[in-house]
Image (cartoon, rainbow, N blue to C red; front, top):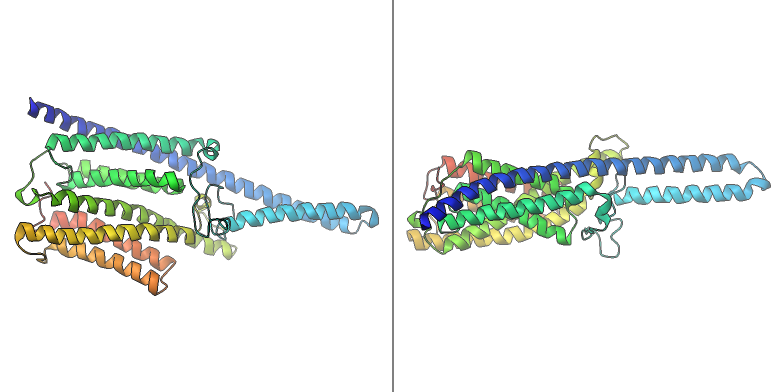
Length: 381
């Protein structure tokens, strides 16, 4: 009877995983739609403000020579033009030096004087009424997260253990952590601008789990039958989830930085969707905070893995391929933290270091697990 229930839960887990993937796809489309429509609306508002400012300035020039009879009118027109110009300048400053205002729910260095520079405002759901696609995207992603959570929990119950003992389970659980961290962060900070990349990465992870690493429910190998599996791997999954989000923010930082330079030189840019993204400095600072937490988690992952290795194999360190690459990842993120704090490595250089660190995480999870033999080769493939 128990085995039948476990088999049923295993089948349900697979179906709910597919349903969650489809729901994430809907959320991805909604996020992209909101980004495109909101960016278009911001661009239109900026162009209208610029046209009004030009019209007001031209009108004031024509009225300057009208004599004393038009003096008061000229002053009034000049004042109006000044107000419009100030509005446009204020919107431009809010975009981190780029043309086009950033949406009011994003806090940037220009309009964050009350809370300090480089802060995001908390998500104001009342303001999102004018952005139905954004509101729908968050709701749909929350539904996808619940479906995803059921699939992961059902897998764990069916296997009668924690559901992260092979690459399929690690990847699907990691995707769940990424989505969960993002949704929790939305409660405190408005990060809807990174929604397309987060949902896209979650979809890729689920596709990798179901297509590249399909693994039936199976018992644990002897080396994994330890409470350290829960401690070591769960912290590694949490760290990987944080690194996934900071990777997305680093990519946006590089794109926004390039856009800001082009706009500063008066050049046109095709990256209009970045109007809804905060400036590069804001992205960098917030990504650094998340990377700091992820680095602490990964440090604990490395230490817990050494303790577990001593219990399982009688040594703390054996230069196994997986152990080496776990240390390589730690070294890259340690260099990122050190360089940014003590060497002034900010801007694009810090973003590239963050990206290199995440690529090492991906390499460690995919290539090392699949192609390098070692004591950690129990991916289930």
